[in-house]
Length: 399
Image 1: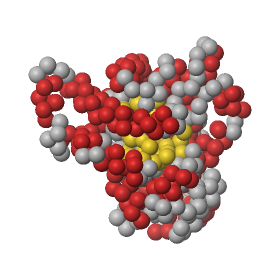
Image 2: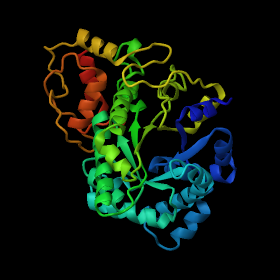
Image 3: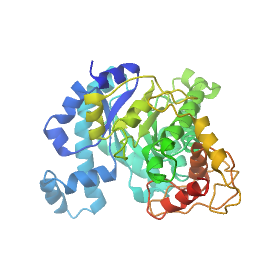
Image 4: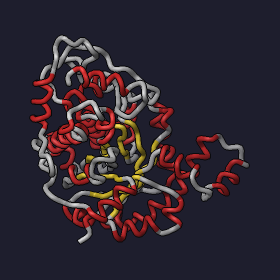
């Protein structure tokens, strides 16, 4: 059996993290649906930027739309919606067969709105209406300003893919925003079955600390953060709060693994796919990762919330924590994560933000420090060159 089919049968949804007009015109996306068990698709502005600038497929539409003197952003969304509505049609049979659990495509609101709640709400409603597709998610970032927009969009009946989550704490905040929107619909006597996924970005943590941790911990931080988040996800699904909402007709906001392409050329090209196999989750993969897993993928033990049971290293969060405890140096005054993080979730600015200094957290695991940094400082891995060194100094100070 094809490895992608085996992963699908395990209970995980495989989505493609890519969209180009050639994927549609050549029949490649349909082939991935038929042969690789792909049941959804995600996109973002960077994916579309690469698609448009590296192909002549969009030139005639650009010329036609430009003649109408449209602003550049409006032109972009017209091109994006043209592709995504076609992809949504290809995935419609999956959407129908699963009663709306699967078969989704995703379109992100403008990154320029990341810190503007009201304009994000308006954009989400407008893009959802313009698409005319019931199986199209609107991607809203899980920033401080994005959380009320997520709640409002869900209350308005707009399906949401919460994007740019990098920690357990951010995930919980996004899940609570989703639940608040659902609970408001229940209170208003409305149908609470509005779909959503919460997208945790995994590999960027490992890129951020590459070369700054011992070899045995290379390419493990992202998985450790994912493990923490997965545990929180399972706890939420069994919580009385969610079960009350589910009893009224609400659906679970599924956890989605994003940024699952391997960045380290020395690591397995299916590292994150194999490590993050878990039922009732989604893994959205770059095209190369999807192809690699279809060719030589392995489906072993599923992700456990307490122990990372995967070959070859069996590294656990407790082992990571033990390394941190052994190597911490309380005399070093380099930037550290504060001991108390609170519950605030600050925005992930692509323009850059520097972590705050704080007291040493002796014995804290890289996973918990990652969560702490993401929650208390607004720092996100892989955002800008100015952000990464500050976090690396924190890791180096304990190495």
